[in-house]
Length: 89
Image (cartoon, rainbow, N blue to C red; front, side, top):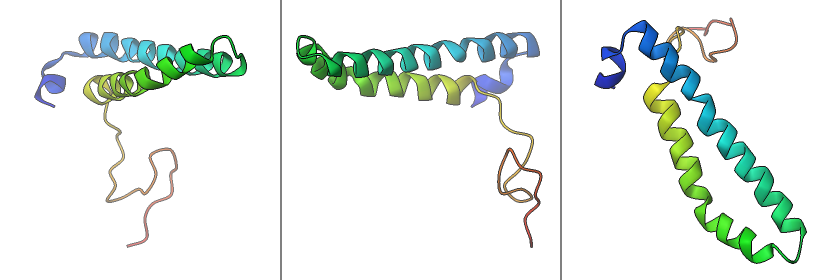
């Protein structure tokens, strides 16, 4: 977390744009995996891809958590990040 706060705004925006890359690669990997499952010829390759899939997921989660921007709403006041409903206290 200390690394995140030491970045200036320009570096943070560059890292935020690069967060999209692991999400796109992980989604394309999933689509390719599903397509390989449909064919008997590529079923063995699909099983191999299944064994590697946790690494793509971990890579994506680490990138988003490490370089993502924290939300402006706190859990103390709002239950959801994307809704404007305040919590009843």
